[in-house]
Image (tube, rainbow over all chains, first blue to last red; front, side, top):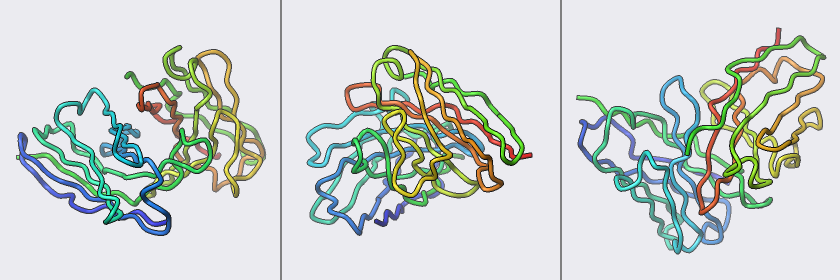
Length: 119
Length: 110
């Protein structure tokens, strides 16, 4: 299993940024996927989840209405579109796979991509 | 969606046992048997250590165990080893395809 995030960078407050997560080593279309973030020196924060077929998704209150999760199962790729970015969105963003165990945990994580919101 | 409450730090000597608590509410920890624990070394991605409150993924040593009582879950690490020094995070399913993490606990092996 390999998850590789990309798209991070520096963006001004109020700006937009799109992240991607390329998946390999498993049947992407059969697994729900998460985005989790970690602000510098801080703890993990769950951001959003999407079901394997994209039929259901949900978001943390802190990003609801600003972030959109999506996926393209034909490309084995997960996306996160982030709009109206704030300084407090600065973090390393990880994509993670819903597990094979009970499906309520995250069994594989990418190495993360850093998003910095600053003027 | 308030973060679960964990102690900021715990410590123990090699060979000893430590327990890390994780307190939530009846809407998350107390409402579901879907508590998981993650180990994170500096600069690394988190690693799943416990799922479904007390189950270990393959490859995780049996020194790691989990439990839950009411709204509080716990991770116990017995026979502490130097490589156990890391940050530990609990996570609970909170319904409607939402999850919540704890604030994290730094484990120091003295």
